[in-house]
Image (cartoon, rainbow, N blue to C red; front, top):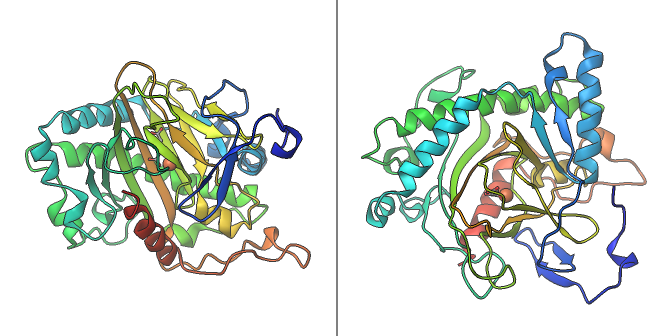
Length: 351
Ligand SMILES: O=C(O)CCC(=O)C(=O)O
Ligand SMILES: [Fe+2]
């Protein structure tokens, strides 16, 4: 495993970039490499009745979340038909004429939801805009298997942002969303154990969670990654993200040694990455790792990220096992909702 730091590898002057969360990143080259740094974690043990099995998985999660902030999960319990169905819906949606997709454009609402048109954002200030389009939707208690009240919220996003001419689209993608929601709540317990807390420590944080989901489409790009990306380098906003990828490679992760490493698709797996709210709450013990997408593979790429965070009113207070007199909390305490709103405002400005 690489533990080289940038300071130890003075090849050429590093490239640098300021991210939307205000952090600066440095890297050696825009060309990515193959490396064996992202572990594959078998989740079978989290469903065991024996706490020792659950703790054994949690220790692997602890190591990965601390070292690189990315891991694959297998044996996660979600049947392959859900990803297949979602990708079919993604193709259906993106194959529509542009004016149809614009009927559910993100500009219709204040939130960062709905359709993001092709090449709309330029997250890293490259010569050309990011070559991707996306469709986003949010948590809805109507489709939450554990919601106490199943009433659909009366928001503009719910009323305006669902495509009108794609029967079955909403139900199908929410079926997958419900599966991911259940897994995310389960994994929240594993994360609690990974932080050496009581297994149920975060249970009350995930009653009405932030649980946004996205379909993304990246056409193959001709420009080099120095001039254009599929999605520019960024960190995610919430606690953790599940990325379901199709078979087309493209996701890349910035390693601590300052190289872009490929997170190649592994059939049936889900990629998990730590995001900023968890990094803040764990006082940087969990790393919210920078990632991006470059589709140089010659075929269309589809993926489906699921962004999971706490109920909006939860204060992102420090996790007790991650602070001490010698290691005081680095971040001001804000609520999850306040932080996500601030990040969404920053993200909307990147045009
Ligand atoms: O498409 C992917 O593999 C990842 C997308 C991503 O990082 C995001 O939408 O935040
Ligand atoms: Fe991301």
